[in-house]
Image (cartoon, rainbow, N blue to C red; front, side, top):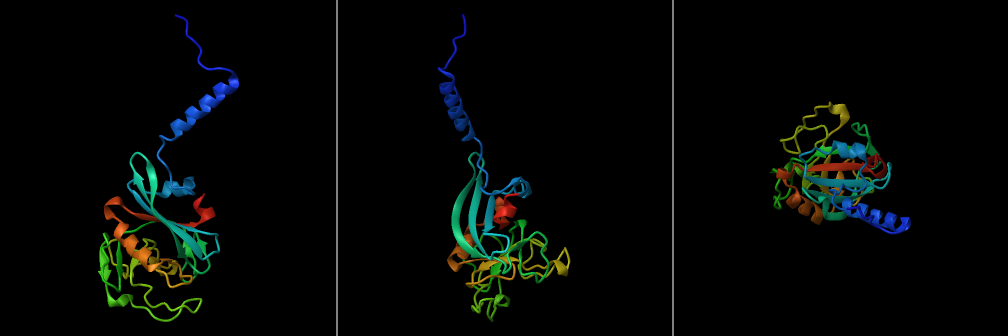
Length: 225
């Protein structure tokens, strides 16, 4: 039997093929929006949870944080956020040094938490200590008290599996350290990412070591590379 051609005029056939392609694309697991191939390649294959901190620009100390989780079929999906945040006073850098007042760009593990206050329900190991107490004022004369009531250590130049207070610096002291996600004090940070207190408590209750959480952080243009 002779095959019967399906379709109508060329324009109709093209439209039908386009609709078919759209249907096929919905079957592809979703990626985290705004991340370019270089940044996506840095995501560990076994990580299924990502805190994404996107800076407004290279030199901005304002950013937005969203939490994503990876579904085996649907791909990366937003589970929390967007939340307003602060980052380093002078913005972001690919080559962080101690005292440069910029936040490091990259993908880093999140394995350890702590704070001056009682554990609010963290799934990560939580180190409670009075050593997290802080006083003084920030870059905009805002009080710093309470900034480290809750913290999550960012695994930049630190040894995972230790408390956030641990002073080990595998890359050397000159490359800085002590980069955390912590309670926002209303102004820019030395290099950390800071969130409002309720959001920090929510984050601590959300991060799941079984999902190998990471933070993806940097300015918008850098993350798009």
